Image (cartoon, rainbow, N blue to C red):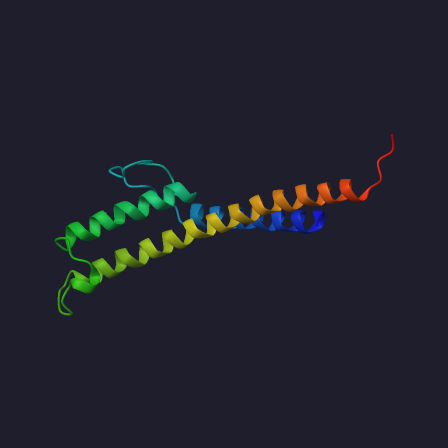
Length: 127
């Protein structure tokens, strides 16, 4: 159980580091007019979320409040809105990836603690 927890923890930390370095490598900066983190580099779950949020605002502004599905096929703004949707989906995928990595690391702690508890229960106490 302890070994499984350690492996899970290392896997979660590795996944977090991979997503973080991949995002940082894109050199994305949170828009200055975002609700939070304006001007900061997108390299974590919160900065990715707030950049995705502001992209949605821009797309809705350009489209007059319409989503991609609401725009006509011949609407010239449709391509811009679909680009915004794609960028948002990519950023939200990163947010979810960070969440899964964090869940793996949290589960790892639980596995290790359970492993130690099981060892303590199995071992005869010496007084």
